[in-house]
Image (cartoon, rainbow, N blue to C red):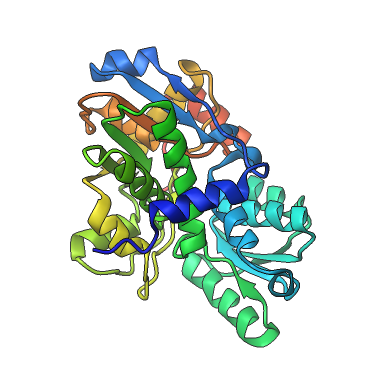
Length: 328
């Protein structure tokens, strides 16, 4: 396919967002390297401003709008991290932001968004319910929608992470990347494969309600019931009218791995106890895929640790209880 988001788009995004986001570290993991039998590095987006990679895409998308468009008010739907990123970017640019969330979004993520001055709307029990409120606000109040993933500006912004991976590790052979709506996976894959075509991009998600994985298996976007999971940031549908991330993921991902709740919890525990990093469930899936043996990388491997915004009480429970899992 002809790439709808190109290397040139991603390089332009990197120039655009410079100074607004951090260049996060790529650190070797000796423990994961021993486990994999290959050199393994962790890309620590949990250290990003706002605690996740989402700030990259949201900032680029907002900077692609002119001041008049931003003055109409910005609105988005989110499982938490994108809403926080939009709230942060809007605050920096002096714009008004409204974030629509479902009741499944953890309270700590809701409060983090509210603390940035964004207007919070809790709607229904799924990302699709939240999206219906977004559509109403766009239609009735003329607000500008900042998509959480299916948007060229957002994808290009997330792809800047892939540029940093290649710059720090040009010999990269495989990348394990969390897979949800596909903005991160598509952007990273586009960037890395443009620079290193032989690199394998492996999407990792949870067994409970992985919409992109189900859509790729079906050959078209499909609805999937949203369920409670430790990887809450990976929840939500990809949209039946998905234009960009589904075809990009279909073209660029080499493999998709799905994980149990117990495996995700093990990834969170490893991150805390061995790597010394506080990581949310979605951010731990790459680590979990390697620990479980479901990912068998060959050659220098990067695990994208996408975020660290986990509820402290949940994190303590997972660290203390090896049998913890999300509520069924």
